[in-house]
Length: 440
Image 1: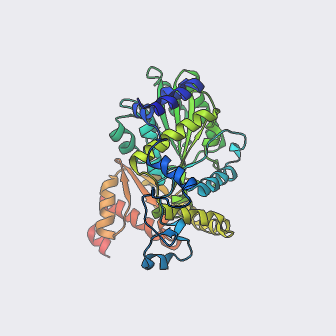
Image 2 (image 1 turned 180 degrees about the horizontal axis):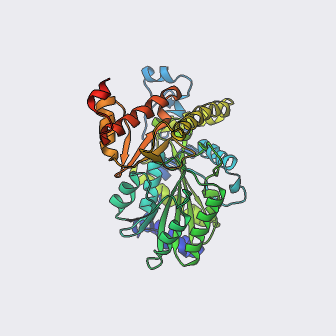
Image 3 (image 1 turned 90 degrees about the vertical axis):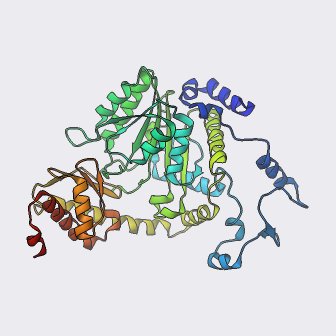
C-alpha cells in the first residue's frame, strides 16, 4: 500500500475506527499524490518567477493561449478564469461561496463540524465518488422503492453493492421511517449500510416534514446504536424547491455529527438548484466531529477525482461563482421558484378536481420537479406508449403502474391539456373509448 494511503488510513483509524471500517477496498487504498506533477507544478508556481516549464497548458503573452473566435463570445471573463485547469478540488473561491450558501440555506449547520465542499462534475459524479470510497461487493445500499434508476448503475452495477428497498410511503402517505428503520436494523450482521436520502424525491417530488425528518434521524441513530456503521448520503439535487410545509433544509444538518458510527455526506450542486443543468457543477461535503478525519476523507476524494476526471471544468465553475456573487442572484432565483411553485400548485388543483374520475391516484408531492401517478387498472408502459403514438406526449413509466410527470418543463397554461391527454390515454388503453370516439 502506498505510504500516503497508509498514513491517511492510520489517521482515520486513530480518530474514528468506525469510519475506517466504512471504507471500501478502493477507499482504503486511494490517496492524493503529494509528489509528482501536481505537487512540483504547485511548488514551481510559488517559486519559478522567471520561467515555469511545468504546467501542461500553452501560454502566450503572459496568459493562457486561446482562440479569439471563442474568447470573443466570452469577453466578460478573463482568460485565466476559463482556460487553465481548475484545481482537482475545484475553484477555491467557488468552494468558499458554496459553503457560505450552505450555511445560509441550512441554519442547522451553524454549530456542526463539516468540511469545505469539493467540486464534482455534477451530482452523479459525487455519488460515484461515494460508491468508490465506501461500497464493496455485497454492501447494502438502503433506499426507498421510489428512487432514481441511476443509483442501481452507480452502486450495484459498478460496485457490486446489494440494493435494499423499503416502501417510500407509510399507510398515512407519509415518509416510511419505520420501513427505513427495519431495513437498516436488518443489516446488523453485516455491520454496515449506505443510506441514500433523496429529497425532494425523484420520481415523486416528496419531501418530509419536520417530524418525519426527526424520525429519519432517529432511525439512523438507532442503527448506529445497534452497532451498524451508516454512511448517510443526502442527495440534494432538487434542494430549495420546497413548495409547501415540508422541511426546508437538507437532512445533512441533522445527520452531521450525529454519532461516531454515522458518516454524513452531502451531495448537491448548482445543476438544478440554479437552473444550469449543462454546466455540470456539483459538490461533495463531509461532516465529522474530527477535523483529521474530514481532511483524510477529502484527500481520498481528491485521489478518486485525480484518478478519474483529473479535475472539473473551469469555465462553468467560474460562471457559477459569478452567479453566486451577483446582487441579482437571490431575486432572480426567487422569480423562477415562484414559476415552479405555481406549476406544482396547478397540477395539484387539477388532480384534486373530479374531472379525471378514479382511474388513478397520485403519490403525495410537495417539492421538486416531478410528481407520480399510480394508474389503477392499466399498465404505465402501455399508457406511455399510447401518449407518444397518439398524442405526441412524453412521460416516464416506472414499474407496472407508476407514471412520472415532470411539470418542471411544462408551461402552466399547458398543464390542463397535458393531464387531459394523459387521462385520455388511460381511457384508450383501458378500452373506455373507441378509436371512432377519439377521432370525434
